[in-house]
Image 1 (cartoon, rainbow, N blue to C red):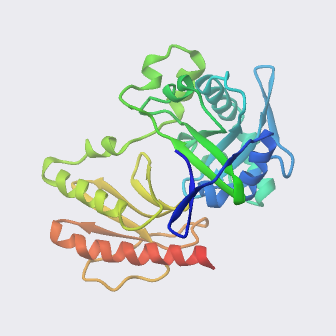
Image 2: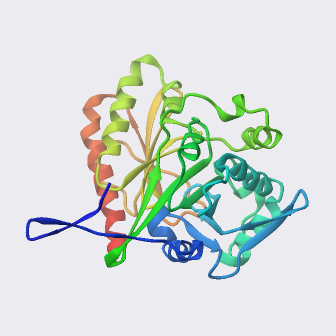
Image 3: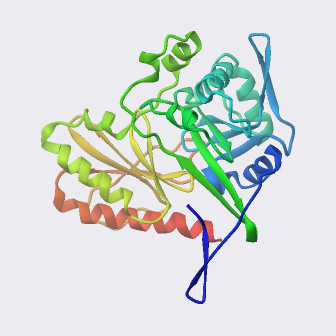
Length: 315
C-alpha cells in the first residue's frame, strides 16, 4: 500500500527508499527499541554483539533485548536474504538461549547493571523477532501456528525520514508447531517456550462469566490508541508502548482486573494493593468484576491509568 502525504487537499505519494545494508535498519532499531517494540536494549551493533557457542556453532545475536514487563529475553535478527527459514533459524536461536541461560543472564546483568538470577527470568515467554525489508510468501506462511514464539516485521524507509515497521500477521493459527513438527530442536524448545492466546483463557472461564469476560476484554482493548494485547499463561495483558498497564485473568470463579498506577483510584469498587517486588517501579492493584454494571467503573479506572502512561511518553 503506497504512503501519501496530505498537502492542500492533495495526496502526494512518498517514494520508498532502498535499504542498502542490514546495519542501517539495525542501528535505527536499537536506538529506538523502546518506541518500536517496548523493549529494553541490552547489546547489539552499537555496543558489540553478544554471542554464544552452541553445537559447535557460534551464534551472534544481532540485537539482544529484554522485556521488562515479562522479564523475558527477545532476540532480534535483521535479514535481507529471502532464502532463510524463519522457523529453522528462530528455533535455533531459542535453543541456543535455553542451553546457555547463565550466559544470557550474565550479559543482561553486566550491560544493565542488574542482579537477576536464572530463576528471575520467564524463559517461557522468550521470543525471536525477524526484521526485513520484505518476506516471501513461504516465510509468511511459515508463521501460521497458534503457539509460535517467532514474529516478523517488514520495515519500510521512505523519503522525508519516514520509517514504518509493519507486523506480519498469520493467516490462520489453528495448529501447534510442536505437535506437527518432528524436528528435535523444535520439540525441545516447544516444551519450554510457550505462546498463549485469548482463547486459551476463555476456555478456563465458566459459562456464567464467559460473556462478561469477553466483553471486558474487548472494551479494554479499545480504551485508546496504540494498545496491544499481551497474553501470558496467567493473564491477558493490555500494553501501551511495551508496558502492561492493565490485565485481566480468571481464577477460582472470579474475573480479576490488575492495573498499575501511582495512586489508588477513587471508585466504589473494592481495590487491593498487591505486594511490590524489587523490580516493580509502579504499584500494582487489583479488583474483582462480578457483573456488567461494574464495567463503566472499570473502564473509568483503566482510562485514567492509560492517560497516566500516555503522559509519561510525552515528557
